[in-house]
Amino acid sequence: MGQSRPADQAGLRRGNLALLVRTLREHGALSRAQLAVRSGLSKATVSSLVTDLEARGLVHDAGISAGGQGRPGQLVDLRPDSVCGVGLDVHVGHVGAFVTDLGGQVLFQRRVTADVPGMGPEKTLDQLAQLAAEAMAELKNAVGVTVSVPGLVDTAAGTVTFSPRLRWRDVAVADGLAARTGLALDRIVVDNDANLGALAEQADSDVADLVYLTGDFGIGGGVIAGGRLVRGSIGFAGEIGHMAMDPLGPYCSCGRRGCWETQVGLGALLHACADPDDPIRDPGLDLDQRMRMVRARAEQHDRRTLDALHQIGTALGLGVSFLVNLLNPAVVVLGGYFAALPEWLVEPIRNQVVAHVLAPGAGGARVVGSRLGFTAATTGGALASLRRVLDDPTVVPVIQTAEEPEEAPA
Ligand SMILES: [Zn+2]
Image (cartoon, rainbow, N blue to C red):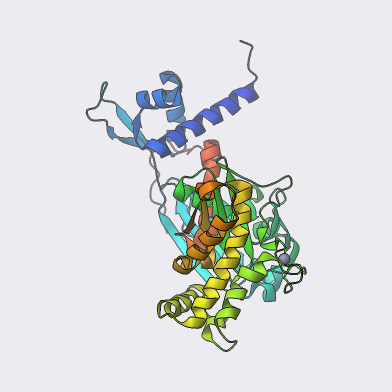
């Protein structure tokens, strides 16, 4: 065995710390002996790593294991409130924030109606920074902020390359937010809304092959294949809303014609459902409220609403069949506005999928409504922020004080 360099040693230790955190997250409280068995590490290594995690405040003693095989041992568990992740959301019609801790407790959730394309990037970032400050005012242990944006995102640069829906081009979101909030730039990540939604759905469903669709004014796709998010060669995968379904069709926000989102986007549904003066089409009303109105009409068998939903579901199903032929997912999750209306959308989708997918039984693909709805992107953002700790627990600093810190005066 050769002499390892210090850099390798540090990397190895980080990897092992991450392994223990993930093992505890999966199994709950375990003794050091059980952790050694589950992780394949020696007891001495586990003891040293647990001491490190304790020093960072990530784990604590959780009583003595009772019964079972072997000697009773002191249990170790994650401290659920030790760190939290922040998800921020820039949407066509609102900005939002969502904060959750390692144990999944929701600490903050808010959405503010805003005309983002009308306000432009600078004012939007002002409003987002204000919301971030509000969300993080009470937090001492946020590990990072992840901003969700619809469109093409250069995650390495923290820049929105192009968002037709927001009418943004080359907007430096991470820089802008860092300048406004004082947050360190390396704690801010910017990502596509559908990618983050897919991560949230994966955490919710525990499936390795999943396609997530954002049902919004724009349509985006987040693809998880073999347990990993598919980003493509330069990070722009999943722009399924711009599949050209009808080259002679109506104009899309991207400037082309007949994109899938012109057929199944929220604009298409609202247009098919209601006349311009109908409150369903009032952009000043909250989207959830407008979706409740659509639902209520469908439940009362309103003919126009049912026809509109059937039309959307059929067009949705044709595009979904392309994705199922291509990717053979275990599940296709309908997010955003689709999630408010699965009773009327899933059947026409299934009919199209069965008609157009080669694999028998549609390759086992299920089509389901998301339980997260419009909150998937911010939930995914908060989870992506927490994932920094799960991948590398050393991003959480060692707590310097030897004694329990006293309650700081207000
Ligand atoms: Zn388009």
